[in-house]
Image 1: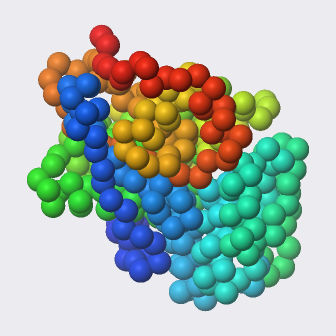
Image 2: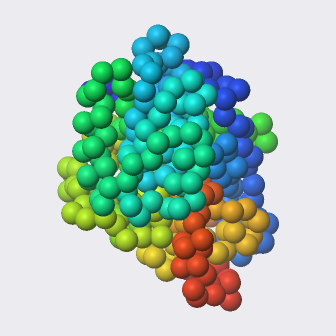
Length: 335
């Protein structure tokens, strides 16, 4: 197994230029005052297709196209954001796309996948969808674009942090820590590759839901752990049953890892949507649970960069998020 490097991230940035958007970094002065620290947010929720996943999918497909090894048919497995990304990038490359997902896929992500031109096939569980895509990938004239466990995918996702750090540098800002959500681990793995080169003193930290804590268990046990069933979490983008061998190797190099409860996921989704005035997914909002825990351990004001991974939320999830009004409880760092 050959892991991707920073050079791969740089190559990916050049490869996808003009095919993905440059997304802004935003902040909330009010939140910064409340926390006593500076928190910057890389708004990949404003990316085309509404998530960072377009970076990895585009890098994978465009590289295969440039090397004349992209067949007529593309398949992928995804809980939603990768599905939309592959559908969009595949159509841009003039290929037919079939997506394999679960029956509990977010309705808005399913609709987006279909609207981008893909055929969507649904299965009772993620494991069944994963097995189905493996079988499809063995057919002639078909290529499989995996959701996270591939060098081209990780490198493509790493361009989000590379871009963010370049934006920080242009403003003479040096983050002390970089936080990213962890599902399969592609985004935070890519963040690690970019940060080790451009912000080598910054800690890189992952966050995942308590209800889908396969990566956390894997890191504690030193071996990949697979969840037995479909996780029940508001952070549907992080409901993967297991990380891959490639992402796990990079996750083991992280400086920290936190789990977020469902209450904290709903709490921070409400507050970030309110403070930033952005439509943001629970999957990335949960990262703030890790941020405030980490800040409570610090002895001086810190600057934190948070990767806002996406902004595709179903009506059903929005209703669940706002069942309790958490906006009466002002964010703070305790410790």
